[in-house]
Length: 157
Image (cartoon, rainbow, N blue to C red):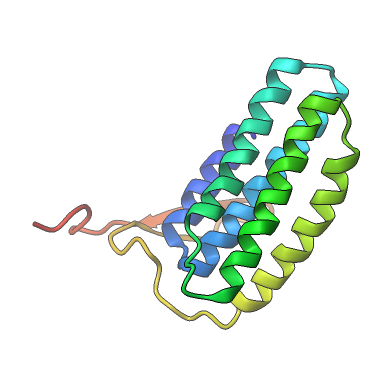
């Protein structure tokens, strides 16, 4: 994941509601999967291991945040566990075959969550974050971001 991608994800997280946060985590997972594939092609075992651990951490966070009051949570837990095992197979079998199959399934799950997120009109989770507005302000080819300065940022005591 590049520095620019990290900054973009960080900015988006500050503006996201619960559904948006799930989508952002999926997008981060897909970036790490691309990094896994790149490290595998370059035969960089250390980077490959690191990226597998990062992707696994995202899947684990999905499992840890499930609400088991709902029946669907048990099914999602099993799916995330399956994908975690597929990630481990990349390191054990030195093959991307399982990861490619898993990625297709994860893409379908992402699309389902994206459809559901369209109905979520809740407020962002971070209430005191800076508002970021992006737009064409100086010309056709220049995209500039500006931050709305708030006098009441941080924690309230």
